[in-house]
Image (tube, each protein chain N blue to C red):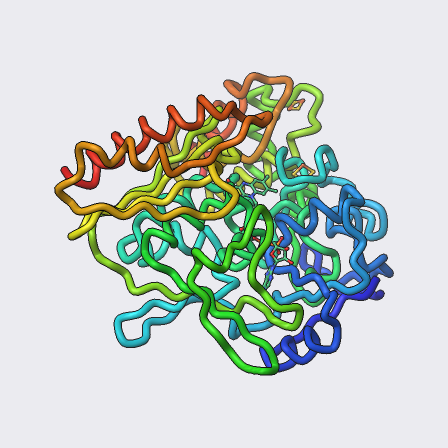
Amino acid sequence: MRITVRINGEEHQADCWEGESLLFALREKLGFPGSKNACEQGECGSCSVLLDGTLVCACLVLAAQADGHDVTTVEGLAEDGDLHPVQQAFVDAGAVQCGFCTPGLVVATTDLLRRSPHPTDDEIREALSGNLCRCTGYAKIFDAVRAAAARA
Amino acid sequence: MDVLTPTTLDEALRLKAEHPDAVPIQGGTDVMVALNFDRERPAVVLNLNEVRELRGFSRENGSLRLGSALTFAEIEHGELRDIVPALAEASRTVGSPQIRNRGTVGGNLGMASPAGDAIPPLVVEGAEVECASVRGTRRVPLLEFVTGVKRNALEQDELITAVWVTPSGVPQTFMKVGPRNAMVIAVVSLAVSAGDQLRASIGSASPRPVLVVAPRDDAATFAERVAGAASPIDDVRGTERYRRHAIRVLAERALKRVLA
Ligand SMILES: Cc1cc2nc3c(=O)[nH]c(=O)nc-3n(C[C@H](O)[C@H](O)[C@H](O)COP(=O)(O)OP(=O)(O)OC[C@H]3O[C@@H](n4cnc5c(N)ncnc54)[C@H](O)[C@@H]3O)c2cc1C
Ligand code: FES
Ligand code: FES
């Protein structure tokens, strides 16, 4: 089936198998490999994207369900070649080791700061509870979120 | 495989009647896991995301109609927090923000898992499930709707369109045991309310939902009764003994909270 999805502000089309996820379509058909595939069961958050502005796991959305909808991926956050403030904060804080979890965390953090520009630590913990990192131990990720909030 | 995407409820019901094997999908947080891991290959998937009639909630003569597609995030953040507080507490414990943004109350009942977190608080509030087909609409008490582990009373041509509750307005709470505060499938869970009666329903500790009711005066023996009503099993998440113990402890704590 053919789907039409507005990705990062631009309309894209892809021919999909009916049973495939939005994550698969983004990575393998549409040329947006920023969202990562780790668990394919909603546990790790590395595939986090905004669907019509709502934070979701792209692995749990049927590609066909995104037909006619808006998707923002991590690729859509930087503007004019400048890193998004959240991305810059992750770089500055050293909140990245292997980097596999980073796109999902950056998207989830962006979503958090839009809803709550100056989150408490508990709010950060809650907002990122669906994103797993196997490397950093999370302390630097927290530093990055706090730094991004302070700069905004 | 075919994906059918109706835009009205009438069309959805007609398609379900024409394709009785079609697997409905709302938030996809259960269905997609099965698809991604090749555990299911349905011939037809019925995507209900575009059916407006299933969304949101409304009030009718003191009753509350929760649309099948109402998400846990909507229950957790909106005015429903004060109207169905135990359900809102349960919603807050579901998965992660990403899961709560997509996961729906209708999908939770469709799944009919013993660990479905919407079920105990809705059972305590006497919820009924609205099932619709081209033949008409009926309401089934939630206690009867769940017929076994991951089994429900839907006919092949029916869809869950809503859940009805008449909010009791009495103190109520939900508790859940698991290894961390997020992303936890309940080892056991419990909803308790205290009005003229004490009411409790347990999760992850019986194949079907259970409702325990006692006079308010029986508070001293209530926790024991609730634990006795469970029929837990040993599995990867916990043993039968642990579960029974945990339910008694939860019931004591929950009672303290709602009687305070
Ligand atoms: C990482 C993760 C964590 C989770 N954590 C929890 C948790 O803490 N607590 C919990 O209770 N659940 C949890 N779940 C399970 C799931 O999120 C819930 O069961 C959720 O309520 C399912 O809703 P959905 O809209 O996503 O359902 P879907 O996946 O769209 O559907 C679920 C089932 O219901 C059927 N169905 C859907 N809509 C209808 C309808 N209108 N009529 C008839 N049948 C229908 C589907 O065919 C399917 O069988 C988790 C899932 C994941 C992936
Ligand atoms: S790949 Fe989607 S949550 Fe892990
Ligand atoms: S940096 Fe490796 S998983 Fe987070």
